[in-house]
Image (cartoon, rainbow, N blue to C red; front, side, top):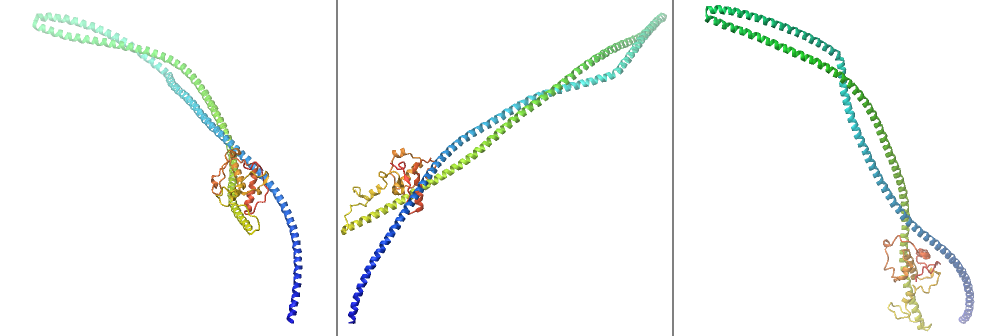
Length: 532
């Protein structure tokens, strides 16, 4: 009994539990409905908030894109300006260097001309001064000779009285000597005549005596007488010879005295003539000395004037050369200052160009890294797409086999299915197709292949490839992972002509910053950046 009661009680209790469960289920459903409504409201609010955020983000991205476009255009203009400035500065530097070289040549030529002119002037004036010095030395020698002659004339003038007295004394002596000579001559002639007469008388007397004796002795004896006469004749002849020689000697002495008198007279005449000549020579020497002194004065005046002219000419030439050198130095200083300024400008432009080139190289490296990143994303997205489509296809096939759905169309996943109409490779190829892309499309709506083509187009335009060249030659785009360009081979210095498609850079930057998160930006691509 107790057990049955328990059983009954248990059944009733079980029914009560089932009702409670149903009530709980209805309550839970109401709560779930309310929760779903609140969740829907929250989702709606979140959706509206996300849409507002997306709109704000899109506006900010558009602003950033426009700013980026402005910056890129200003960068392009700055590059063009720097290239123009560098070329202009190079041309100006070349012209300045040419001008400096020409000025240096002109300065060297002027220095050579001035040196030659100075040397010519120095040689001419040295020759003139040498000739003048030679003439002056000759004139000094002549003046010295004239001074000596003048001194001799003065000495002669001093000795003239003494010489005149000596001449007078000599004349007196000559007169006295002449008188003495005449007296001696007269005396000697008289003496000679007297002695001659005496000797003649004595001879006649002796002859008479000897004749008488001879007669007497002849009478006495002829032999002895003849001998005596012979002896007497011999002695008389000796006496006669002695007297004749004395007479000759006296005549010779007389002739010598006459000659001496003549020579003395001639000497007196010569001394008179020499005295007159000396007086006339002295007068002429005085006149010549006067003329020479006048000539010396004139030559000294001319020499002084010439020296003054030479000094003035030298000072003028030196002043001109100094002025020329000062002007040349001023020109050189001005040109060197201009050159320094141009060098400073060139350095500034060079640093600016280097900065621009570095920024461009950094941008190109950024493009290459972005292309590598996009290539990796393409590879991952293709693998994910193949995997997801394969799992979805297998799930649809399994559901169709279980009878829960229709049979899906046959899809080929192998790479060799060229004849198939539904292949994964065609889907992948259609991901890079631009035919169905409308204008003003959000870049986040593009596929990774299309983004890669956009980046490549921008990179090609940045490297100077025009749209015409890209239209003419449409090379196939190889996989970027196998054709990676090294950063050192990136062409630097090309002008940037990216158009409005440069806004993709901000998308790439966001892509790199978000790494694996999808892009929610709303950057628009115009038809200019879309490859045809």
